[in-house]
Length: 227
Image (cartoon, rainbow, N blue to C red; front, side, top):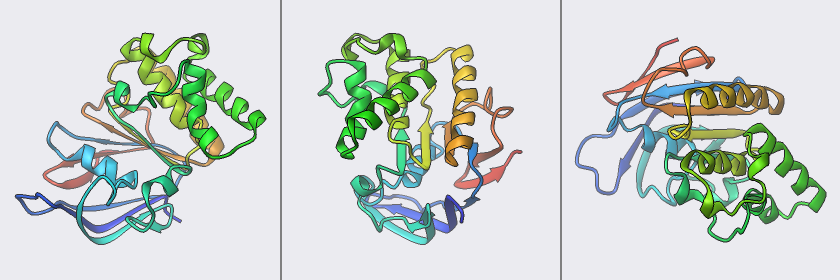
């Protein structure tokens, strides 16, 4: 089963002023792939579609075939997809829960809402903080973190949900190239162990071209394989 299937898939926003793009995309293998595109290419909208944000946060109409983990896009509300699909976007401060007094509480927020046992929640927190190199931030208040630290904590919070499909839209923008490389290596291993797919949306090829199993270029409303 493909983790993501788009066949002649079109999304027409409610306020559209031009014809919709038509996407064809299939991927079923665990690991990391990337979609690169310039500003204004539509990659953030495509990222949100792949994260199941239609129609809750993307009003409009869709056409064609769109499946996420075998489920048609738009069939389930976003809240029901959150245990299996996660999206991290470019602005980390906007993705904090706003109700946590420590990084540990922030990362625990999602798993707690799943009703998991305390031991499982703590295990997920430890795993996510270690993977993102955030253990030293564990007792810090989220409001005291730098941009890069906040970005890593938001990624840790999403990882703690253990999604099968993990979409990151320019989620490394505030990290150094060295930190990005280290995190990509760890995410690759995590994805393979969890049989999950990570889809990166980025403006630049570097360093993603050599670290992903497949890379596509998004241009003029079409996806073209680069490698």
